[in-house]
Figure 1 (cartoon, rainbow over the protein chains, first blue to last red):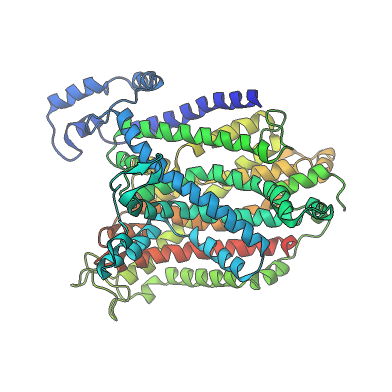
Figure 2: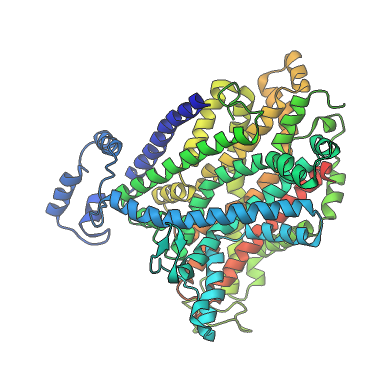
Length: 335
Length: 304
């Protein structure tokens, strides 16, 4: 197991290297000159002297491969460079934005796991009941709603309308911004903070919660029909024990895979959710940096996201072994 | 055929959609059987009905809309009325007409992009699952690299390089959407490649390509069909997201996502500008999901 984990950790290195290099070259193929962008924006006429000084400062005149080498030399020392737009250190931007994203993402995952799995299990146990049919429709519907449409709908129902109708202050949620930024234990919102957090968190969680519920229901149904479930019942275990110890544990395997694969979707949804709610996290910052072609910010923040993604995938693969002891990691077929 | 090999049965169960050993002996369900089962599913029929309606509306768009997509009236941001069923947008264009014409954009992008990603995903996944070994490792790592880049970032980056247009979106979706498909096909192939009928085909000396595409693929095709149907919906969803982030088709193209983003900031004054195109996205994607689900249930009589 340990050697498997070490081998997987080493594999993260080429993955991250190729992913970032790919983005690096894509952005160098872009039309337009970053130097004149830094000097004053794409549309304005800029002084040639300024452009030259900028080219020298950032080494933008160097051959592509030299810039590429410099980029990696800096990145390996965790120096992510500085923003083309306001010369802020990308490390600082990352630190500031990542905290907001992690808090939002954490709440989304809490909602996904708690609501998604319990709804899925209940739905499978009471198959074809009214609740099950309702859940099936709602979870199908939820995965079809883009985060920005859901976001605007929730804003309309819980912020715009309450404001127009003059509901009490505490019942009016907020449509945008981070809010007072007050938290206890890092992630529990205090004071007014929850009125800013709840809408983006629900919006971000919506799609993955629905997917988790559907996947749990499907794989639970599959497992409930298995022979070993009948055996477990026959040897006299209570229904509860059978469902939790034998059923859920086997049913979780595809769900765990889903949550791992889904992480990319969550990041995609985070870009849209954070943009819609003006939540100052990595997602909205990445979207902004693509729009303004702020390469250091884009690459720096993407590096962080890619690293996080690789580590989560590793955790997912290792958890296979926990959920399914039939899988021996590192021997024969990779999980 | 009865279950003799618990390992194979376990493998089939863990894949989920792969046929169990019990089923392999039966004849494949006839098309009429599948249709009969599909027809009984009310949601799936509702979805299919909506899609038929949508395709007709898209094809005959000029006949069912009172205004053109660029035609401006004197009313800006007016709410729904008898003249303008869905109201007008910020420059006085009829939202209903634009939503109907938008169906053309969404369907075209969704279907072409999905076809592209299905072809790539099936070939890559089949190769990875069948050959195993270093080919599998290499392909799985490649998929990891692509999956490691948040797709919105990747899509936005490519769209910015190639220019913001409909064709770019199709390419972007095609080349970022195949990973999930390849993982599904790989998993099916992994579980199927050691079954006895494959061994038999190998013993008969068939070429590897023939075994892959003529023997194994037909048995792995059900999840592919189901996934592809749902993937068209997903592609439309992603297209809407890219348009919303303003890297898709540009104004005056009536892309639904773009229309939603044009209504941004007008939520309290003109919510209809957001909700009608947004609703169109939701209903369309939903219809594809329902049809996909209905197909899966109809193709998999084991659940009956």
